Length: 162
View (cartoon, rainbow, N blue to C red):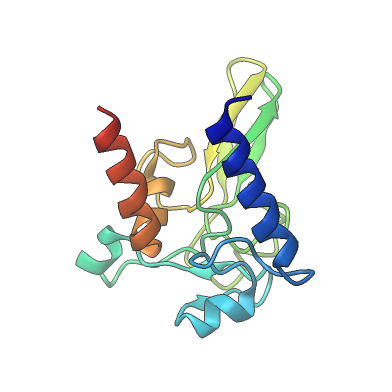
């Protein structure tokens, strides 16, 4: 192991050992419904997911906004010709699949997914993807919108490594 990697690993372990039990490791990303509400977001009463307005929803505020249980993809193994129901409202407890409880009383309906092949498939976790239910990276742009400072650091790191 290189000296730089050893020093970095030691610093991470030191910081992690000083955190109180049950605390988050990220200072920017809320992780509980209470933290999301304190940050100014509406949360689902069914599963605690935050309602995050995407760029699209800011331009078209009359469209319904889904709750975003995960700001990244769900990677699920799907069977060929099996019928799945993808949750489009974000309030289902059995994400990414619909439990027929979350969408009640909303404008959202579960989307039918019938895979052509048995394989692992990526599904959108933020519910904002225009290619619903497939993941296309929109979840990461929603994450960047919520976490501006860490996103700027990531993009700066990518840019400086080129």
